[in-house]
Image (cartoon, rainbow, N blue to C red):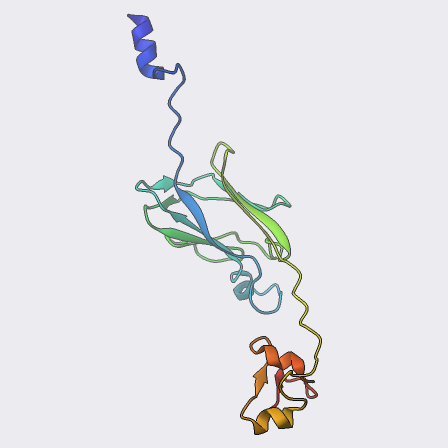
Length: 185
């Protein structure tokens, strides 16, 4: 009788059924806050991580942690993320709400060039992890002669131009003398 009871508790394989993992995901990591890097709280709060609960059950995040590679650790307060909802965790200071949490840091956490955001549950088990690495910007081609026209004057007289840097490949065929990102204007 006791053998049957043990089999029912542990299942047919003899191991306890694994707890279902929460269905959380990082939907956005703003690791490079737009604008200058200052200690201004508004600027710090432009650096954030968004976590979404894609499951059908609420997830209690109390004592969970969010950390970077350098081991800056944010410990979640008593907080429950409802199904289908997201929470944005800002680096700076602010008042916690149902959709915004604040690390209360005075400087940036996430490295712009490369880092990893890791979410761990209250027992320290890794639940999510996302890494990033900025690649070096591609080098634009050296200016050369337009295969159709040898000067901007010729291009314009034939109805072409202006050409914009980063938008038109023809931009790189001419010299941008005033450095405004536009040629054959």
